[in-house]
Image 1 (cartoon, rainbow, N blue to C red):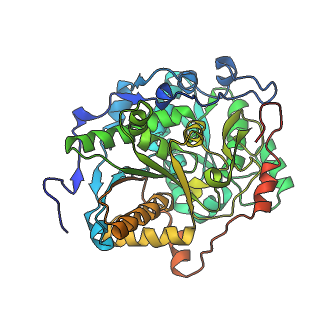
Image 2 (image 1 turned 90 degrees about the vertical axis):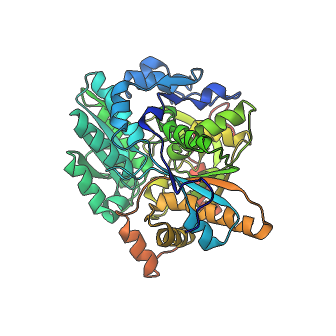
Image 3 (image 1 turned 180 degrees about the horizontal axis):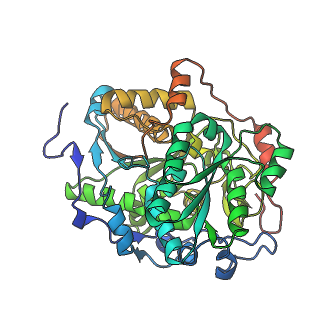
Length: 462
C-alpha cells in the first residue's frame, strides 16, 4: 500500500477536538426550507402542535432556522466518547486498485455497536426524551440501523423503545432485529395488525412488503395514543441533520489538520441524515461564499426521490397522519420495490436538502443496485470493510468519479461517507453472488400513481 507524504492511512482527532456544538446549515441558507404544515389548515405547524408528537427541546431544534451553532449537552458528548471521534480514512488501496490520480477519503461511521452513523442522533433524541421525564419512544426503521441505534440509546438511558420495522427488512435482516431485542426494544413488522393505520394499509395493499412511510404512520399512531411516549425519527427532519453534523465537523477538522480540501463530497441519500451531516460545514462555507464544493447525493434508481420526484408539499407517511413537508417526493403512497438498501427506501427527502438541491447547490444521481453491490464487493476486497448497501451507493459514485479522473488525468480529492457496516446484510450479498439480484426501475406510470396522491391545494402546484 503506497502512502503519500505525511498523510496517514487513518486520521484521528483527539477527544479534546470533538465538536462542542452541532452546526445548523439552515442558519446560513438564504432561502430557508419551507415550514412543516398542518395537514388540515395548511398553516405552518406551531410548537404547541408539534410537541404532542416530538419532545419539547427537539421541537425547538426542528423550528430553529437562525441559530448557527447549538451546544451539545455534556451528557451526549460523554456518550459520543464511546465511539467518537470516528476515523477519516485515506483509501490508498482503492486508489491503487483503480489506478486513479484521485485522492479518496472516507469518514467511517460504523465503528460502534449499532454499526452506523444513526447513533449520533439516537442518543440525542433519547437524552431529550429522558430529560423530559417520558416513559419511552416509538419509531420506525428500514434496514434496521436506526432501530438498532435507538434501542441501544434507550437501553443506556432506561427508556422503553417500540420499533416498527419495514416488513421486507424484518424478514431479510433477522439478526439486526435480534440486536434490537437484545437491547430491550419490541420490534413489530410493518404494516401490522396492531394499529388502525396498519390494518388500513394492509386492506388497501394485501401482501405488501411495507415501506418507511407505512412504518412511520404506525409509530406515530402508537406514540400519540400512549401516555408518556413521543415519536422519534432517524432521518429527514431538521433536528436529525443537526445532530448528524458531527460527521462533517469532524471530517473538516481532520482534513484541516493536513491542509486537505475536498473537491467532491459524496453521500448516499434516502431521507438525508448521513448526507446532511457529512456536508454540513462544507455547505456552510459554500452558502457563505467562502469556498466552493461539488456535492453529490446518491440514491437508488428504484426509489429516485431527487432525480425523478416532484418538489412539493407531501405527507411524510403512507397513512397521511403526519405534518406536510415540502420536499422532493415520489408521493406518500409510493411503495418502492423490495431492494436491499432498506435505509434508502423512503419516498421523500429532507426539506433542507431538497431546498439546497432545488437551488442548485448540490446535484444528485441514481444508481442501480447490482452496480452498487459490484462497488461494495470491490471496496470490501481492497479496503477490508464490508459496507452496508446504503453506504455502497456512495462508494459506487466515488468509483465512477475516480475513474473519470483516470480518463482526464485530473487529481481531484474526493470525500465520501461510509455510513456503516453490512454484516447484517448478508442475504443481500448472497442474492448478489447467486445472480438473483435484479434492478427494478419504476416506470413513469408507476411514479405517476404516487404523484397522483400528493395533496392538491393552493400554493402546492408542481
